[in-house]
Image (cartoon, rainbow, N blue to C red; front, side):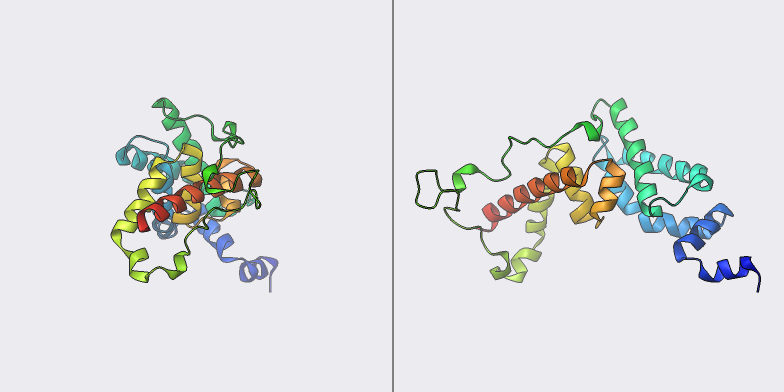
Length: 214
């Protein structure tokens, strides 16, 4: 058995996919587009002014993938690499529309509370810093309430109103299912920064849901 045949048999599915892409396999590329297009479109939509422009951004990103696949070194997953191309393309297009600033320059607002301070007991209280009233337990709510279209609309509307960094991070993590590593790599932010942005975004969504469901 030759060394090449041994490598072929031990290649990972992703390595095999990359080899097919480099060989110009159209079916492999079509499958890749089908798999990642929805996530790419959703992320691009947060950087630009309309869905039509976001679709153009995604198309441009895929051209970048095709042009750069031969130079892909595998330092990250293929998905992370594709998302990084997409985000860079979307940032450039968004900057042209005067709607974006470099994501990495947006540090968390350390003086901005994730939850209204009025919900906690004051310093002169016997239990300072504790909740005045604990957040509602969503698990006790009827399953139908959480599944109603109106409830989903509240979540999506709240996310849409978040500040840019928070909106993008929570959309990638909780809507598109990206891992923290993928978000950090794609957006070029630290794990700590990503964690703070996600926490604050989730806190605001939770507050909106509490207000709606109560």
